[in-house]
Length: 168
Image (cartoon, rainbow, N blue to C red; front, side, top):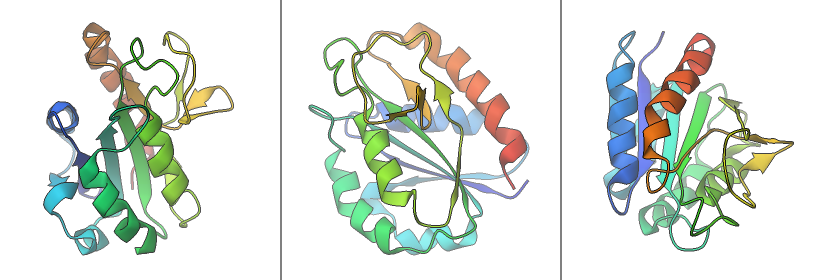
């Protein structure tokens, strides 16, 4: 397995903490963490495997640091790269925009020639609506550290078991 870049945007450090937890569980290869607030998109050229994560801010928005990074990512060549997504949201207070940040990132990269892996069934989640849901599955790993933190480790472990065989 080639090295993995974990790219995250995190206003309150939740996405950073999840990125670190995911990195600690990947022992098969090197993992490099990048905070979108201070990274150059060109850093991704050396990675075939990329995990992108974000918190969902406000009512279904990306954190400000992703707002600055996403236009650069849209112009970057992702052809041939394998990408997995994760996002955090509050499924109780913002149940009709749960993990929408993941949906925004997905829409930005889905036609960029990359292989997006790691969809997750919506079964077991309590929310009303999400732009990250397509055909009954999330486009990546959805986490709720505010209300369902006790489920996060199991969800991360299951997701990693699913995506590791698909990483190059």
